[in-house]
Image (cartoon, rainbow, N blue to C red; front, top):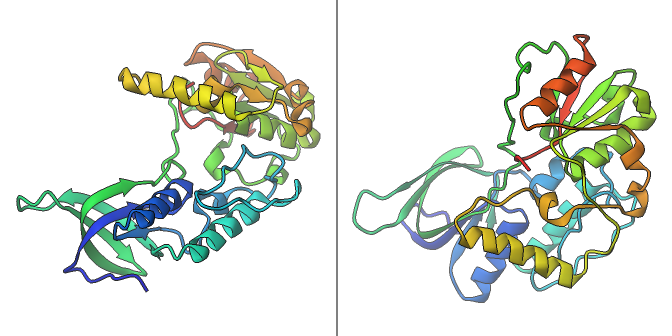
Length: 295
């Protein structure tokens, strides 16, 4: 059991045990840096354990190997919310990572003295606890704080509005005219899931710009090019863009028919969603927002 003595000053605390948090923990351990990993979930898997059951490994972005090990192969029809958490859990055990769960961090502040230490207030297995650390790694991700954009008409729309975070599964949409808002990989996956259930004539896809489809493999060279582009923007002090604005949308075999599953509506940032909602009318039909940030 990791040391939770509140009088101890840890060398580092990692908040989050998804892919970034586990990678950080591995390298801290490799460098001999004492630390704890605080994970708000009850079980391993990060955000992956909360994904919808219909998401299969054939549909997900490539899941990179965690450092020091290779990800075991998964069948294309294996549920992503089972396969990836199992991989993360095995990794934690194999590398004896000091993960504490459930440990929901509620506040981080500097100590009142001149030490520069961080005070991390958390609820660990239901009890309040304050831990002290010299350094901090924020690996919380965005799943618990989804970006929900504002657009004209949103407040008056009487239908169901869902974010990817809240996607209930394709069965929910049976018999409902549906608008999918967003130009990322999740939107393409939703189109493929929903078109057979609602009919392509009842499915509208609203994007800010025309999707860019890529049919080549994601090679190490292409990955390095993407990383270089992101790094260049970050060094220039510019905000990074969405993933697909760098990579394009990959037409894997199971996706090749999906661009034709619904209609694409390029529009200005504010008008794409509001125009799509107008096309859905005022009946209680759903809008699915499938974007985590503006692209």
